[in-house]
Image (cartoon, rainbow, N blue to C red; front, side, top):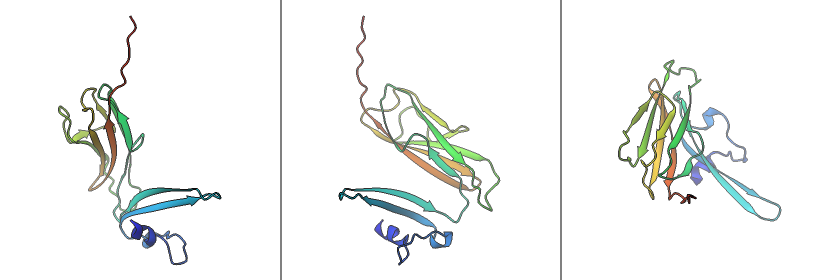
Length: 160
């Protein structure tokens, strides 16, 4: 990761900007901040650069979620067509996947919509699942993932 970050800066410390500055590949960058009292914070972000015209894919609501088996889980994928020259004029298609595969849930989950609903009592308590949303445009595709951590439900007392 350090080599990728270092490769993003020119010798004079300026950031590389042109597409020719970044060959196709995966990159990770770290932003480090120091305040006047010496406090430090950092954040990493990753991105991929491709010479191919690929659609955009993401899962709304963040990359990590805490859920319970007693509740239905609804996920929404966001998709954008590639606007690059030479991109396919084909429409977008979607596919969802869940790993490890919960019993009773078909995989891969081909869907004409950008929504995935996992019924209550499908996910097992104590298991961490990875959900993937893949968008395909012609021969190009992009995938986004989210992590579902399944915990215990908080007991609710019923008053009679």
